[in-house]
Amino acid sequence: MAMPVPTALPPTLTGTGELFQLLRDGKPRTRAELAQLSSLARSTVTARVDALLASGLLEPVGEAASTGGRPPTRFALSREARVVIAIDLGASHASIAVSDLSGSVLRERTITSDIADGPEKVLARVAAIAVELLAETDRGPGDVAGVGIGVPGPVEHATGRLANPPIMPGWHDFDIPAHLGKQFAGPILVDNDVNLMALGEYVTTWRSAPHLMLVKVATGIGAGIVADGRLMRGALGSAGDLGHVQVAGAPADVVCRCGNTGCLEAVAAGPAIAAKLRAQGLDVNSSQDIVDAVAAGEIAALQAVREAGRDLGTVLATCVNLLNPSVIVIGGKLSEAGEYLLAGVREVVYQRSLPLATNDLRIVSTSAGGKGGILGAGAMVIDAVLAPRAVDSYVAQRTA
Image 1 (tube, one colour):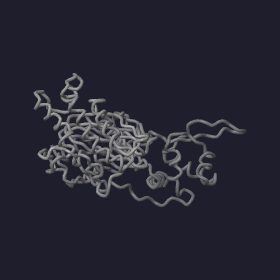
Image 2: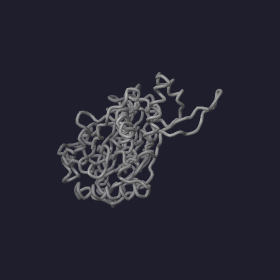
Image 3: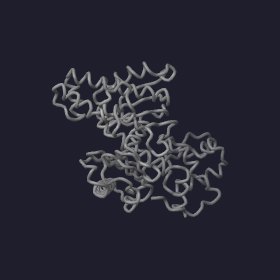
Image 4: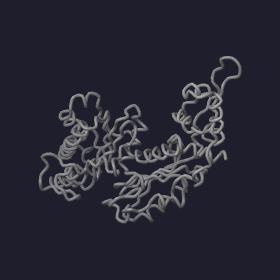
């Protein structure tokens, strides 16, 4: 749901949201420091800081050292001014969190939830838990700046609608933002779960590496791409769908659920690995079973996971040559197999990619783990509600 259009700000306050961007890093600054960084007149900075203080988005956080006279006051983002709801929907689970404006999670809960129950039931379930978590933080729906949702299917990000998601019956073209907008204020933003995992990994660990790929390897295989610090979604939101790239040398009789043959997902995702291991006499049915077999030192499992890593590396080598990321993060349940999967990926990527593209390339396991989707969903909303125009709108409402 879009934020209401406010009365226009007075001329001296136009651009308040731009000035606010200098304080989003959490570092306290004085009016004089803000004037120097922004090249604005001191009087203009004072008017905009006062408006941000009145709106609650800024707060005083002590004084700077005095150079003579009264010590100047420092100001910083008021993290608790508003809260954000972050939701990560999986095939069989849902995670719901409330975070502050810095992205710090205040409350979080994960429940068993079948995505096949349909949008009305699933969204009612997670919305009810979100309200409970708000109450635990002494907040209500009116304190919510926005809601971010990650879903396990292709999303048209501009509308928040899913497009024929294969494991989400009843969700095609469902208007999630309008549905949740009846209960929560602010923007309701929806994205693919892997995109949000990539964003979560970036904001928590890799801000120094603005070109990043996160690859989720579980029941399916997909990637989220961060370029110049921003998610790259493509024309219709389907960028990063690695799972349906054909693997060179894959058996022609390996049929993928998409209908094609030789897809990466059909040879290297959890179900494919489990099928290979069952054919060798192991009782393996899920990605967790594969991880457990690797942890137990089963030779067949170690070999199968490493081979899956090589197949993944074959596709990623092309991605490295094309996109030149500085970090590839391997996430998803199969990443818990540790170095065996990573070793296979590294073996092929470093062999098949151009030397310049791999000169500083790091291939690592996820650091955010299972919380990446929640952290990314929160970050997506925070970026939206603290953008310059959104801050201008909010200040105008609060100071009218």
